[in-house]
Length: 561
Image 1 (cartoon, rainbow, N blue to C red):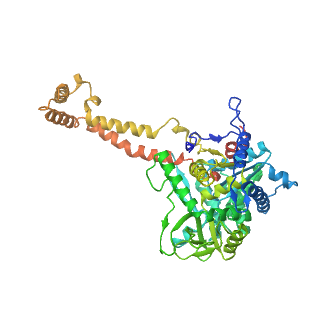
Image 2: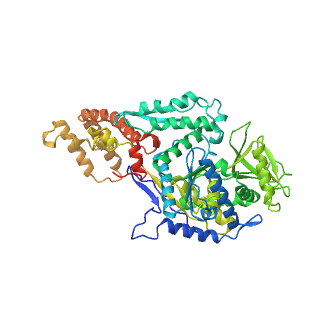
Image 3: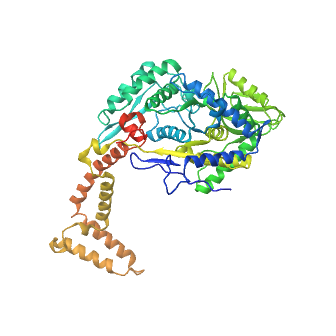
């Protein structure tokens, strides 16, 4: 079994990039190029002899790429101009670079992936496709806006929509999340920009958000309004990429065939998933059973039905849009039963003995009856990497969990999966420019120094008092007495007394260092507050739209100084 990759680490310096492989390889490392990665991945994919229904994998790949390019172009053309090649065969044959993320207000390091997709595709004369992962949960409808300065700062939540009332409704996917309060959504840009103005007076948010409001009137979905507006801005920046929601990708007939094959192999998939997780935890020395994600569960409800195994999908209905785990049962020959083990249960003619056309028909019928079967992250990238992309571009988090995908592919097919690229970056607020008076200050280091001094005052107060010759006689006697006891060898008979006498001397000398201790304690509160403020304001997690257009273009590599 090949060793797991070392998880990449995000760069710490503001403006720094992590791009592997680089868009422009260096002369001393020409093998680290996107062209080499594409060539290697095509060789790896050609080695797959797996049959998916009545097709070989390479046959399914060609059909999926055709469907993917066609549907992604159609979707994107609804809100921005695109250029479609006239020769479909040549278009399919050219490299496809893919990435993806949830449709929320992510930080600039995530947005850098979209710029890298475009750069990779230009280098390869291929096509870049970004997946909008609208099947993920809509965790929040507000963002934290930093307010304050380096002495004291806090985050103030600003809503871009009204939260849903009941807790169950907060478990819904972006795909199902409409806009509840149009006025709240429309005013978000100005409200957040006003708060942000002291830290970033020219944030792109104020000028960009009206485009999100415009898109919301067309698509009526919270996540899609923001993602389409962001994609339209990328067009203005000169990025030529296609986009497609995952909820649309899983409706493609070829993707349904592959998902049907995975579901028909529910038990193998379940076992491969859990075994890969066990290997990952062992390799990375992780003891928690929920890291990096929980094992898939298994249940026996009725002995007549046999074992139910959890599979990495989500299931919900239009009437109850809460995302729920999916359990599969294959005890009935020729039938796959899926259930959330609560209220939903559906029987599908999916097995290794039924033709793929019936898999497509069954999964399509679920859509028609408003039942949503949506893949989790690992299945989403597994489909993308095996069936569509010549290279899939991950961020830091995706690169960590997709090591599991690699191992699952090996266990299911016996072949090495295509490799992926990793792109991330760090962009922080320009604190040096905002607060030049604080240049060179380090409240964390200052606070640590104060704590060290306080500890030293407790155990070595004599170090912080006047020189021995200048000390009052009583203090001088205490210091001399302590020094004698320190020099005394701690025999078994004297060790306990020696310790008591040294502590007693320290306590008595503490009377003379009381003022210094009080002065140091008075610094702890302000320094701790300043440390929290500095940490908060220097975060790399602020949304990309909190920065100016010029800063963003420079960070994305679209504009030089």
